[in-house]
Length: 385
Image (tube, rainbow, N blue to C red; front, side, top):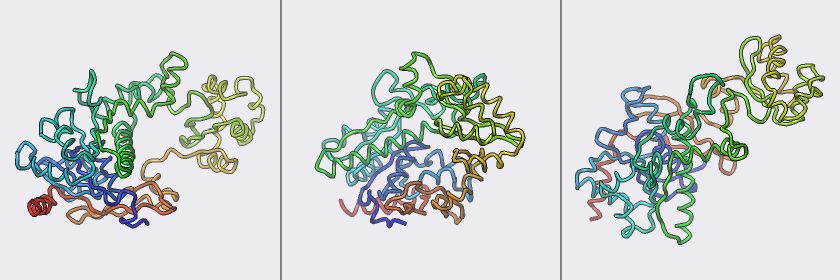
């Protein structure tokens, strides 16, 4: 695994004024790649510290997106604490915050205060709708952003009630965009360029990752619709019921479609006028599903998946997370890493999913207790003054 000193963000210092998911996830990504991240929390701590499962008083949810950081607990409305926070930022390269627009300015920690004093600072703000605009003052959480950005309109079964994606994709998409943009801006600063502000609206990033859905709307003038697990432009490409439950296959091109026909021993389907190309199969996928599931009912899903694997057709069981984490590929990639929480609880976490130069990225086994680094950092700052 890569050593901390060899990581691409080694030497970068970041101060994080964030709670819950989007901002903390961004900060953790920077820490995974070698940045020294100080998390500034209110005296009561990040609200996510209370989210279950809680083991020996420490939230495993909180640990999952805050590894590798140091924690400082401050009441930022107190002038002395505000000055300490300013000092932390002035010796850092990056500030990350995910408060409502205007909050950091009212606390005396806005970009306007830092711009002249630290022009190389990369100041990243994550918010529901952005720092400016008609909805900028509004707050938001993953659920409301999924609703506002269109995600819930294409998620779920065609005649079902609105449902959100089971993974908080708006939170994590915005965290990813923020981390990527911070890294790009750091590269610019290291090349002699200026620092500056980064504005990451969750609403916008969630629309941006819906490129296929927005392009469908632009091209047709019609809203994309809910299709359950099916695909709007291809088939067979969804979950199907076998004798013992569901499995998924994705025959994403003509050759794979012909392989499906061979596996189910129905070569005549390849020449059926309803199914001769991806567009027609997608148009007629309800009829196709009925035909396929009549075939699949003869055997359990594992049998069909083995046959499709041999034929080169991508397929998968409908895993729970227990099964996904136990997949041999997850083991090979070293995704599941040991974690020791404050208080001694031994647990596990999912590490960095990316490999650099063929090696897994080593992640920190440090999970900060609330405010545990406050005294040390304050003493160091006072020693410099």
